Image (cartoon, rainbow, N blue to C red; front, side, top):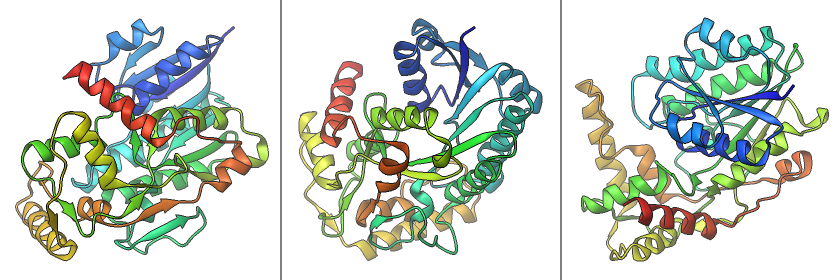
Length: 333
């Protein structure tokens, strides 16, 4: 019998890419994708994935989903710099706990959790951050806070009847991206995209294909590598504004030249975000302090642990991932 691999978050960018790639390249597995949303159901089925719609906050759904599964790749999350804490707690903590507990109950061999390096962010320049460095006393937002809680639960369960591992990919890019470049392009089209600070800051990106490579490494990881979290990037820090301007010019748009002082941008974002919270605004405000901080600070990760323990090696360069997005964007828009 074929082994089943569950991929959650299949209506999202990473989950859909993971499901389709595994189905194409690993026919010895049944790839079962799931999401609360069904807008990619047809596309996933056409790519020989099974699709099951359901809510991971529902215990019985998780138990049904994980029956006869060998691996779970948990990509689903509520990812946003703004929102109600309870929404993040339900989507990121409760859903993860339900899925881990169901996996344990049904004898799933290995649980792979897609975490986040947002947990490192502290509004300072950070270079070559290692997994074991002290974390900020307070997480930058509810997303980082609840993802850390979920990651801790996953890793604490390792060796208690299930194998677990966590991956922390930084700024995922590539075809089908719905976050990094689409957000920048939306701000640009609204006349709101400005260089924050000097414009020379570097950061790590991670091509979706490289995240998939890390997931494959996690599926095949030896026992001594399990029970840990790993930074995942392309391994080539890039000037964020050079990357954005390359994308803009490739799409026949004028590059960004106007600059805004970092402290001023952070102050304005704080006022806008504070006002949104004061009036219990549901919609994410156009500026957040986290968004400004990410655009202005240097932020790179050390991936030596993933290389040494998981055998991870990036298979795509950052510029290849950017060009992949550009070509996809042109065909779609």
